Image (cartoon, rainbow, N blue to C red; front, side, top):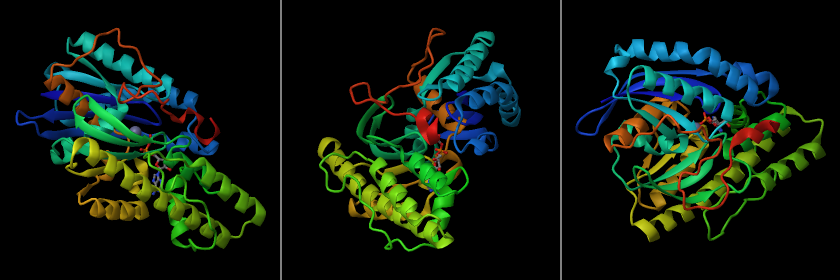
Length: 357
Ligand code: KG4
Ligand code: ZN
């Protein structure tokens, strides 16, 4: 089956066509992502209004390119999938409405996808990974440890109680005068810094739950930075190195607990999967490798283009659902918030507050 996928929940406008073969394996026919980084950079973070407008302007052209690159017509589609949340509501409306229009005009099923579910199912597209497995998702809007047990069957084992991890990297960069997006900048500065110069707190270390917290660490960095102002380049490097070292220790500890909880509840996971922009960080990858080895499981990180937001993951999640007969109606409403597992009552967090917006 062939599925078109549309992603517009944050600052990437993306569309892709993915094939799900009869043996359940996936193949990407096209995958087009247009990042809005340039539009948002002057503001130091994603501006929801600018994002929504850019999605409106870009999406039709990107869908057309994805179809053209895949070499198929709309009539050949088995379905059209769009990320229907969680995310910045303006963008979600643009993507879902476009998908509905295509579904109506071409009389093909609509599949409304939870953006987090799409991240969660990606290793089945890239590596045909079998359930169950443990997902660590760390992006600008989300920080979660999720037990992925089946299509539509997810249990959140841990989440951030304040900032998302990528958001914390972006805020640290902003406070130190580094450009947006901050994650790669902080990583680069940290590589030239001394992680031991500042004794920053290791948030949540040793706690029995698998939750994350990053705002206390962020405040500690801010206090140190204002004490040192005016900052010299070496101060910035050392502050970044200290921050990143604290994030690494905290991540290793939290994931260790998350994997233990996974074992207790669901047995051995087939892999620890990392996704989201933060998984691009080499130091974090190193920490994840150690955590996985300690828990005697394999670490799997999809290629960077499929770790960050993209249309292929939405198309694939659509194909997985479609194969199970799960489709949605034209009444499906866009959702700013949408928990991956309906049983959890803790409020989820999304990035509309990120970088001050
Ligand atoms: O998954 P993603 O591309 O998009 C969404 O958040 O939707 O993640 C982007 C986030 C940003 O906050 C960015 O600063 C962070 O991932 N990031 C990194 C690195 N590369 C991107 N954080 C730390 N180290 C990196 N190398
Ligand atoms: Zn994402």
